[in-house]
Length: 183
Image 1 (cartoon, rainbow, N blue to C red):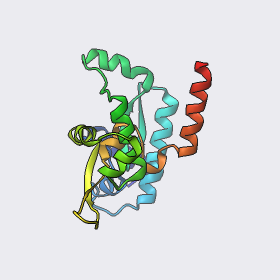
Image 2: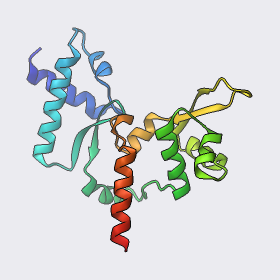
Image 3: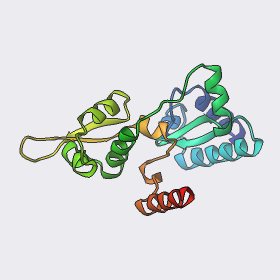
């Protein structure tokens, strides 16, 4: 199969996908075996082409796959048309989510120790929003539940993987910059 034909098929598959499409899943669509390295090169070409076209959407690596996403500068218009406000999380929910994201797998008691308050309600909210999930139980007395983030977390925050989270040092630097602007 020629690269232009393959590119058209891959573009179509990504367009109709209901979520981020990993390369492994793309490869399953073809009768003949196509190396993932070739698929990756073609997806990279598509990413660059959409970026250069400056369209209202981009092709981005998200949650271990690839997905068409609305450009940030267009998203507020799309939300207004859909009459839907972006999902909002309270500061407490964001703090809890950040602890889980950086410390996973993490126990509720560990989250509470860091935050200094009960985290049960916040964890329940994050579970309901499918941003966190139960990842297992720790081999400790009482076999406490351990929590981690979900694929939806990566999609919601437009992250290709957990490795894309800013480091603690970067977060501290951003916090210091924001505080210096306030004073």
